[in-house]
Image (cartoon, rainbow, N blue to C red; front, top):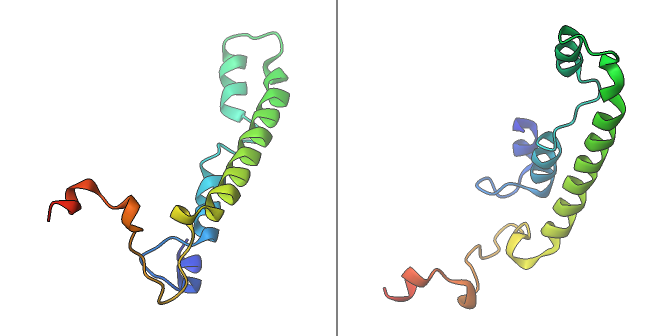
Amino acid sequence: MQELQTLNKVKDTASNAMCMLMAMSTSSVTLIPATIIGIRAAANSSNASEIIAPVILATGISTTVAIVMTKILEKLPRYRYPETGEDLSLPENQQNPSQENE
């Protein structure tokens, strides 16, 4: 994340690459669930390693969804990464209602 921040043009806003990294790291990437296999083996499961295929499938699906949603959201105006010098304020129709009374 720190290396990505050095490449970031707008220092107080997460770049698209930073958002992608966060989405992928939070999508529960697990290739070999050693802890679950250990718990199942300790509980005398007849086949403790049968959990590997469903875990790999779930990991693939969750990572794919994270990448697709990140790509979709970065194209929406509200989540678009600002260019250097671009106005970062919300459009008037999206202003916070509490700011209208001021």
